[in-house]
Amino acid sequence: MIVLESADLTAHILARGATLAGLWLRGHPRSLVLGFADPFSFEAAAFYAGAIVGPVANRISRGQVHIDDKLFQMPLNEGVNCLHSGDEGLNTLEWEVCEQTDVAVTLAVELADYAMGLPGTRRVCVTYALEQDSTLSVKITASSDFDTVVNIAHHPYWTLDNGADIRHHRLRVDAAHYLPVNDRNLPTGQILSVAGSQYDFRTDRAVPVDRPLDANLCLSPRRLNNPRDIATLTGTGGICLQIATTEPGLQIYNGSGLPADGPPALPGQTIAPFSGIALEPQGWPDAPNNPGFPSILLKAGEQYHQQTRYRIARDALDRPEIATSMS
Image 1 (cartoon, helix red, strand yellow):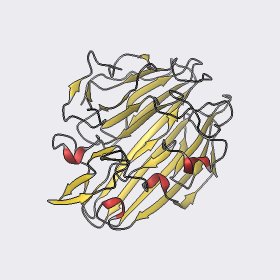
Image 2 (cartoon, one colour):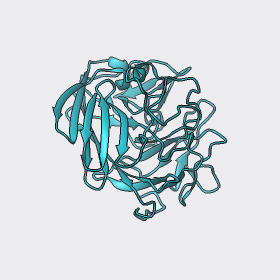
Image 3 (cartoon, helix red, strand yellow):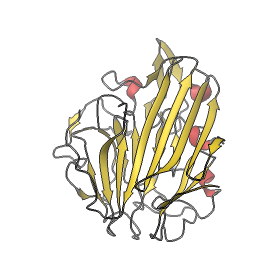
Image 4 (tube, one colour):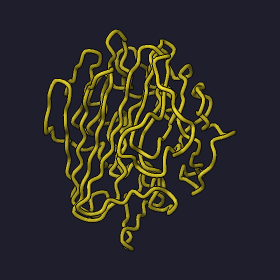
């Protein structure tokens, strides 16, 4: 277990899956992300808790990707879809620790040509760093020697108070549009206004726990050079999470499918349906099969770079105002 510690935060990182296994705010008794009492339970869990997922996160229709007019077949692990690059994705791999200090660690992994069905010998690096203002920064880079596709996501489940589920959490997201999905949870190709939908979080409101939420909110038409504030999640005890990211999308999953009979959780936690919410900055899902979506193509010799900052504020009122339109 890799332990990072600053004046306000403590983070536990596992090399397997480059996983955020726990995150504690000084003075708060529970981890702010779901985790397991036994670190080996992360290997058996099927819901990606805290892991880095990819090299192509989210769903790919039929697992098929065209790159330079050539068809590549990814593994199918969700019916006829590929989810998070299959059952041997980044979350299952043992990452190498490259650098480590008291407050930061960099891990890396290399993917062989055609691993997960995709071309290119690829190197992926992630740096977790505890910064000022009770902030956890996650920086991810990737490179390839062949044209390929990359859409990496960090997949923690947030739980900010002492309740058994997230029914009292409130969420606000800077997104005026979302991607509706079909019965296979694949985007239909439409980009719709959130107005009148269950994905309208432009004003602060409670996270629903009476139905599944699992869709992409459209933050911008392309990846940004620098992170911008896009979301705020607030618990009942005055703790709030402020998310800033470079990514064009935010997948919202309210944990409806979390198991009720999983391994024992971290102290004070329960793992069950709706016990945590995943807020995953990433590219838009199934982008290679939807020409109108932001591209996830990574050209040979270029570098993929994303950054997300999670700021933990003790006072729910201590948060920035965010806009309400896709820029």
